[in-house]
Length: 167
Image 1 (cartoon, rainbow, N blue to C red):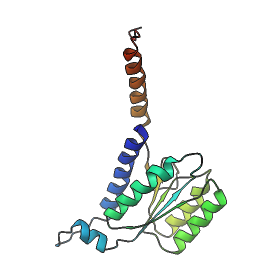
Image 2 (tube, helix red, strand yellow; image 1 turned 90 degrees about the horizontal axis):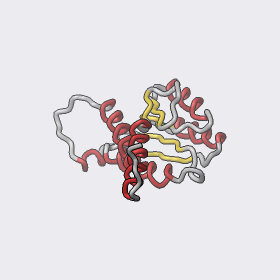
Image 3 (cartoon, rainbow, N blue to C red; image 1 turned 90 degrees about the vertical axis):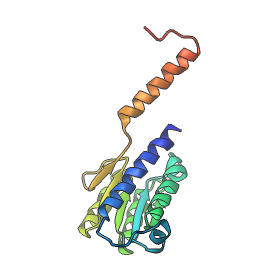
Image 4 (cartoon, rainbow, N blue to C red; image 1 turned 30 degrees about the vertical axis):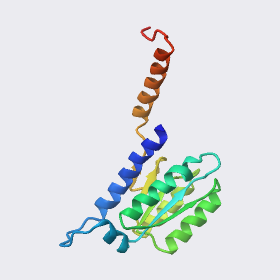
């Protein structure tokens, strides 16, 4: 539950960055159906794996897809399944078929080369969860807040069991 709600905050941040970067003056007020009808371009997302971290497929993929689609973007979300060579291949294919924005969850450094190539093409790069110097932006969890929440849940559980937590 904590990871899902934290990720929604991250996805909202990512979507906010996309929306801010795409802001321009417009006389027409758009609606959600207008946004869906007007394709603003492709957002390319490379996820690192699915076997060791099912959250990438079960939470991240649907939330990112829903958010970017609602904002009027076409999404291309692929998973490298823990294979750095596949990660590079996915990145090359995405870049050759056109991306408006590249969102990368690095896999053992494979994202660095993809990010460098994307930036050389003028494509903004967002590193998600795993920092890369080559990215324009970095979005991640607030690890201190997560630690606070985890500690509080332990204290609450101990209190429920009648334990003295004042020591």
